[in-house]
Length: 550
Ligand code: AMP
Figure 1 (tube, rainbow, N blue to C red):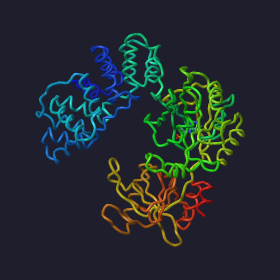
Figure 2: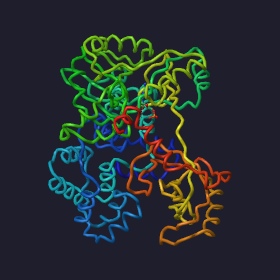
Figure 3: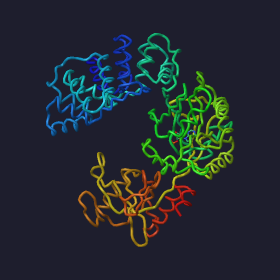
Figure 4: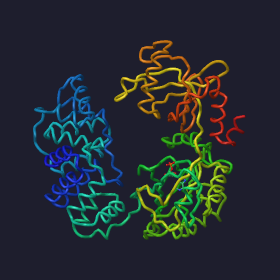
């Protein structure tokens, strides 16, 4: 572990990618295969392979307590150390100097300790073991042990570079390494295969999630015509929670986009278990009521809640809309073209369509399109049915896990924007600490102005500098850290959606607002009203919800 930590220090010290991969490769080659597999995993900042269920559940506060116990530093010293490095591992390296027994850990011991931390129940037991380990090792090892616990080495080494280092060390094509890592979900396993010349044996295993295929953005139907000159598939784009479903030996498990297990949607398990054979599916979980999707802002209430809320699944029933098939009865399907995968998916789900009208599992809805007007009408049809837009897919494309490519393009409903007026300003952070860059803005409610959000981004440095000078001349009230200003600067803001909120006077808050542009052409008297905010809010709830509320 000491040599691992020293190598990490050297990797951190160079900004050259090639140099980083060389350092990793040389170090891996100096180890036996099992140690190299452990080190490769640690280099990705992980304690366990991507698919593994173990989690140490050792968070910042436990690490902080262990560090305090071993270093006997005061709270002030600890805070100063933390602030200097911005991470607990860095702080540990400094705080533990001269406080430990300096007895090094082997990589196998480090791995066993991580497993033991995951296995121990309760924070007390975990703290005891962590304190023991930190007291034993060198401060440098403690630094990297803690970084692995927090999931980030912060030495400028992304997983892609570790893959490159493997290709270099064992003289194998990078694409084969990437594929083995993708299929096994374990860089250590990929290393073992590479080192022994068996990369072709890499297999995808059930209940080990693989990365999701991602889409790039398109702006207009015209973009889709040029991306898919031979025509493409126009599939509805569902606004919900992406899920990868694994089924085999009578078990069903769902994984989220972060490859964690999704446990909130128990009602989907029985219908999925009823499907024939073993498989891995890709799809989106949405709320579904009376034949229409429920707005995501409403459905997301189901996230993070498990069995306790018995009634939520009834009130907000989940529906899995399946759009891809990756693996079926032992056979890897993801390299086959989309058309072949789709045919097998339809055959698999045929049973569902016949057996019931239950929407627990549905097949995605799609059409084909080639001309601008065909893409446009598919897009409009999707919006009418309550969806976010369309996903355009190339019919002959493979499923490429974990990559954002041009085989899938998303075309989304343009976001509504609001014209608002800035009513309060604050100094920014970091680079912007000397300029007034945080703007609280308001809409009109009769002859009052009511706040509805706060935006930090979207303007250029020059615009912010000019506005700073302007606002400094137009302060109405100094509230300490913020200034109420004359309502005279009109801006156009875009946002992801609107939520009810008690934080703002309007009773609503724009989520993720960003400034699209300044609107010097627009008088304050003509900015948007609270009424319009309410309208946009209700529209996003969907027509069915409005009917219920009224
Ligand atoms: P976005 O989150 O807006 O970047 O869009 C990409 C996401 O859309 C994907 O990660 C999926 O979760 C989701 N999605 C919805 N419908 C589909 C579909 N038919 N095919 C693929 N992804 C979809």
